Image (cartoon, rainbow, N blue to C red; front, side):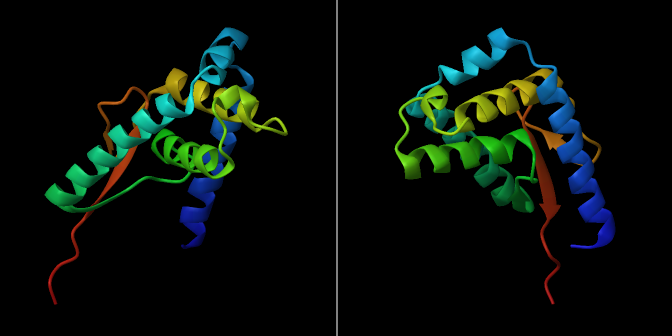
Length: 133
């Protein structure tokens, strides 16, 4: 990862933090109410889309600090820690995840060079298949 990529990643994180601060409380509560099954279902939809993009284009990745990446990470965390609902996660993690996902949903603006997902607000970067050597 070069300096420009690191700066882009840091900028994305700063933008997300700013959006998170502006999320209305009722939206946070809505995401806190999501069950592990709800999160797993959404993550499975994202994985299916990534698999399809990989099949069509050779590879597909979920950029860090993207909604796509966050749904997958949340499912992993809930599964490992065995949390039944987002809002029940300890040490403020549920609040932070709920605020993060609500901020992603509120933004829903795809970046240049990133294919918009059929999932509201999700973005998936498509990497072209490496040329055969």
